Amino acid sequence: MQGLALQVQEGLKRDPHGGDLFIFRGRRGDLAKILWHDGIGLSLYAKRLGRGRFIWPSASDGAVSISAAQMAYMFDHPC
Image (cartoon, rainbow, N blue to C red; front, top):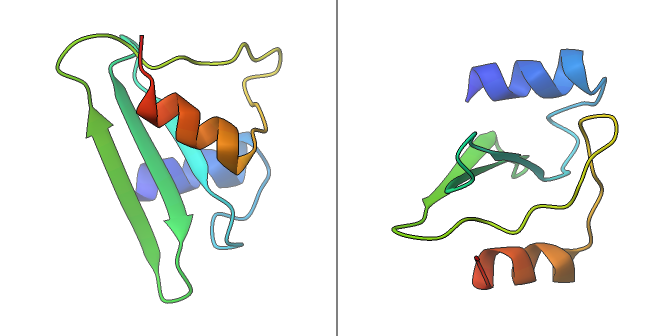
């Protein structure tokens, strides 16, 4: 969790404690981790698919902004 927070802070130049959700996908596409600050501390949610991969938007600079609806669709409809 601290490693992901460091990636947010140093790689994206964002505050991991600011309340935004930061989603990371594993190399194979079957694992996603969500990092967020819930007002008390950092929380981490992880989901690994038994089969298929997460639909993932293309990123030109390594980061993509998505809406709450897009995130919900991505997690509810893996390929």
